[in-house]
Amino acid sequence: KTTDYATFAHGSWCFLLHYVALAVVLSNCDAKADHIPSVPTHNMSHKERNELKEEAREMFYHAYGAYMEKAYPADELMPLSCTGRYRGITPSRGDLDDVLGK
Image (cartoon, one colour):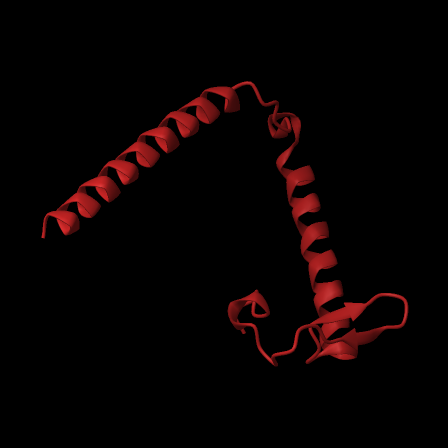
C-alpha cells in the first residue's frame, strides 16, 4: 500500500510542478503580448470596415459555393482541375472535416 501512496504523491508533485511551470510560461507570454503591434483599425471608418467585412464574406461564400458545386462530398477542392480530392483512409474524420458544423 505504501507504493500506491508513493506513486500518487509523486504524481501529484509532478502535476503541481508542471502546473506552476505552465503558469510561469503563460504569465511571461502575456507580458510580451503587450509589445506586439496590432492592425490599427481605429483609423478606418465604419464604411471601410463594413466594405472589408462584406468582401471577406463574399470571398468565403465564393469558395464554399465552388466546393459544394464541384467537389462535395470530397474533403477538398483542387483549384486547377476543379475536382474533389479525398484524403485519409476513413470516410469521416469527425469534426476535422465538419468545420462548418453541417
